[in-house]
Image (tube, rainbow, N blue to C red; front, side):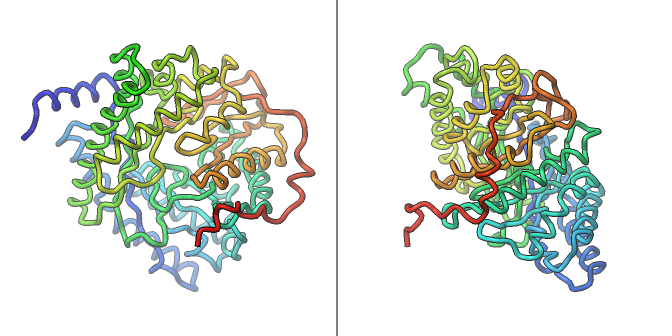
Length: 452
């Protein structure tokens, strides 16, 4: 039986506390599109995507009207393109990126992910060509997102790929220099990439997924922040219980939308990603949650402990609300997409070192942070290596989405717009790590990976 109080509480969450469904993402397999003829490959991919997702936006809009729940983004993820276009040249991959972009625009979706490669132990020819094409592909497209998995706990870290990705990020920043290097905001480097993630830029449709599937990413930092503020000065057990209860309610909303969208589209329901995804809007901040726990500012001493409590309680509450949890599931800490994180970084309370420490207990990693445009490729590779190591050693997903903003330095701001937000340029260490990065080869898998 429906509880009137629960209905009214959900209405309040939507109207006053920024509760929304951050994304409904349709995953689409492109393996049946593979062809030796590049033109035929492009045509088959365009047709498969547009036919599979032709009703995605319409159904999401119907669900918004039916339930009064905002669905912020409608997205698509596809099979890692390095596999589908394994025989293509760099220019062939760029053309394929444009096909993906055209399909996304024609369908009216916000982003399409899967311009991706898995190179944790080495790169097939298709993966190498795709990686080399990334700067041009990110420059020439608007809605295409790219992700490269350079490490797993089982395989270790491909440091050759880490080095090359530092250089690719620099090239992408330069080629989109007229737009505050926004191309880098669509590019992420992963360890232990999940194959059912609905969030960009790391969404891919994994090789073990069905032909098509619906995955949903919930949000709700404002709802959690309000609940913590309301409970007041309580002990940590009560605090954790408060987060668990509200995470359950948020996830039930995601479960509803996921099952309804899948049913109306006639495709399987995959997972609900429990991640708290902030936006630059007031009252929609993970940093505000941490501050409501008792921190004067995100980034101060105690921040990592507060984030650990939050992340664990969100998962414990959310996992009881849905049968299928996946993706990343936890709390995101993207600097440019969180008003509280932006303020903390601007004041100097939130540094790159503190961010890195926080990633050991949060959902993903170093996300959407801007650094000086003259940062060397080796330094960027060093940042990637540090973060990826946290994921490999701790057997968790970690990632880096860094933007070296061409022509800007510490003290400046960059502007990306929309959900991508804006960010201060953060200070990095001046000392070089180039000799370390240039060693090449692979960092071996940790001893605890040997579980067979």
